[in-house]
Amino acid sequence: MQDVKDVYCLISEDLVAMEGMASQLISDVGPFVDEVVRYGLQLGGKRLRPVLLFLTARGVGKVTESHIRAATAIELIHTATLIHDDILDGALIRRHLTTINFKWNPHVAVLAGDILLTKAMELLTCSEDIHGFRRVAVACRQTCEGELLQTGTIGGFKISQNDYMNIIARKTAPFLACSTELGAYYSGAEPATIELFRHFGQQLGIAFQMIDDVLDLAGKTDTTGKTLRTDILNRKPTLPLILYLQKASKSDIDEVMLRLNDVDGGKSNISETDAEWIAECICNSGVVNDIKQLAETIIDAAIESIANYPSGNSSAITGLAAIAKFITLRKN
Image 1 (cartoon, rainbow, N blue to C red):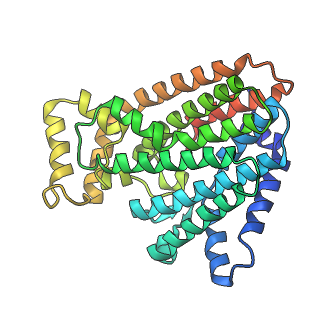
Image 2: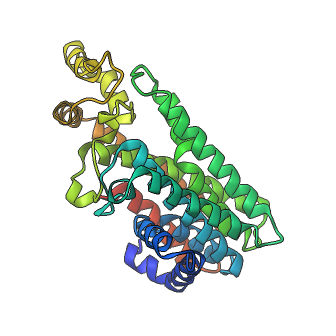
């Protein structure tokens, strides 16, 4: 298995081209706009989606201008979603930086995210082939639907594991699936190959969100670089809480539910002290390890699905497997 740093080296030229395209897109708007949007681009972090797109492209064929354009657009949209998520969650920190909504204000953050989103759409429409635009638009819609579906569950702690998995299949997975799908598509792959890699990305997205749920609960701010416990603070039932409520004793469940609901009749956020107490209860119950094991099972199946793909660039396929494994091991 390749080291993740080595994997990034495989596509370093592609990532540089993508960063250059993104930088060019947001220049010459105006000093304040440039400052805010460039600051926002620092919040994106690992560039996971472009990495998946470029590795798939190289595994199936070669990287083209269309790949660079699609990767740039997807990263801009991803960053926009992070900016908007930070507003919804009331987050203070992202990637060890103050979030835009707190560095400036939520009004500025909304508009900054909107600028990135519209710049991405503008970029995708530069091509005569509008397939990429269509697929990214679908991913945008699905992500918004997933986010809204999850918002509708706030305070509803009887949601099933299956229902929650369906939510994250829309909320987080679409853009990872879109990345691997377009990586194969723009390399001229056959429909069956495109679907193979789309499904691979979809499974990675589901596992990614499961680990994100765990990190929000059990992670450390110094390591993750972002505000934590926001799911509990916002009374959002994610997988750790769902599984905890299935396996804990009645007395423990009653105490957790009391703290979750003992705020304005359960209509507003809970205290940080109660959130930390609930997080500790869940972590001590063993469900964190259960979720990690489930995520590993999903990732292993995804890796197996592409393991025998007859690629001329086996390093790229092995790189995809390394990135998939990294998802379950990451600390941020």
